Image (cartoon, rainbow, N blue to C red; front, top):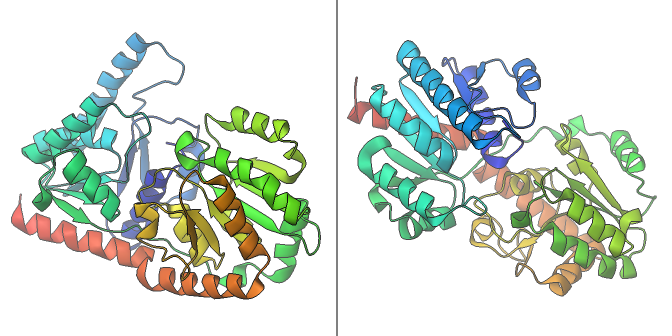
Length: 375
């Protein structure tokens, strides 16, 4: 249980299937960020914490907890006799799918949202062998980059891989009236006629926030009242806060941490920035586009699958600080360009990357796989 892209997809998908009348259970190996109580209040379906790890515990304790958590999962699978088990990260694929296979679950779907930071190569190799060995009927990938990672990087047979892009459910614009947007901007200290940049994502090396902070002084030199809001938390927060102080830009940077009101924050932003160095298909990007926020993002395959440069947003090579700053300034200084890109991106997401479209493809895959593997 943590605030991440794979967890976001899991919860949204589980709610969609629950709303259609399917009995749904979401099981997590452990609660990394003390989210269990909040999630159980927010969602209607069953959420189970297997307590298979304890943050800060020694390795012996965590091995014992993992074994106990796997036993709990085994008993859950045997007791409930699920028709479908879907797993959402390489780690949960490795742990959950073999148990589902041994428990006789007919439909076993793994999913792959991109390479995990600092993942050892031997674990990727093992993941590939497990998928090819039949523990999973199908591995779903979220972008062409992740498909290539699975097939070329992990050696998974192409016939076992199916791409289903992520999808999002965008709230109606009426939920964000102008007076509420103004209040949000005021609460963030954004002066009238100033600009608000926003970036949403865990504060990890993969997300490239350091490049955004390195580019921000150049933005401030052109537009001194600009504010940068970083939404999310993670292991690099202290380092990034120090970088902001060292660059003397801390007055213009807001570290907002984990938030439950991301759509409200997006509704108040002028530009969304995603300076990642590696991505599968980022949910935050789809959410920003769907909310009509123009985007500047790294030119990565998982992003370029969605964003056509100059049509739906501006793409820059990852890690190129000067080009990142120039793209942001270009958008902030050109209202017409911002409006054109925002409208095009919003239309694309609302037509091709909706939660309904994603879940309907999963539903079809579940039924097709079940017919091929009946109980």
